[in-house]
Image (cartoon, rainbow, N blue to C red):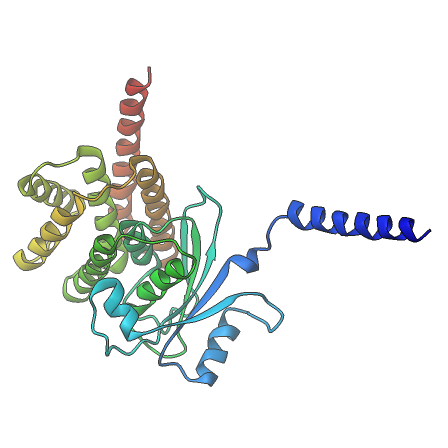
Length: 295
């Protein structure tokens, strides 16, 4: 009888272990909450409230600091960090999705700008919710997302992270200084990336031609100084080893989300018709090209 009791307990333990390993891991266990270091306790509570996080939810908490800003992208270690982000690590092939939970407090960076920059940095397969209890530009949230990847042991390339930060700065500068909307800037960056991925330019002159072509196609007029900023940015980007298929799919998703947002805001229809036609023609040519490769 005593032996039977041991067998029963062993069987129950084995069954429990089997169920534990067989069940999918809870999404919450893959969730990381990154606070801007300068937030007070009450502001951190506001972050959790905005993200609808309760005391019973399971997640990791970390701070992003000025030193992280310096370590990841050679930023100023004395920077004040306020932007926060929740990062849910997704399954392979899921892609990137960025949501701005407090758009009234993220004044310069849009969701598509974050997505474009993270794609440049090499971040993959995550859902990111950006939040701030105070009005900020939103730039420091990018470093917070890098911190989340570092916490789970996924090392992003430092050169790509620095370039992604530069891209975000160029994007917000263009939207602030030129007569173009944030959505138009995001579309411009997305299309230039797509053409670089397709054409694989060999020289800076090739990059300059691509930039000029896309500016003309979208009828965007920039100052010579800002045009050169774009050329310099994408000349650095052309050497990055980005997976062609992953980039194509993600950029298509970004383009669609920008167009949807523009439609919601009632932005210039003729501009977005040009965008739609461009991507339709581009993806058809890519399909024809890849089809020829694998015949």
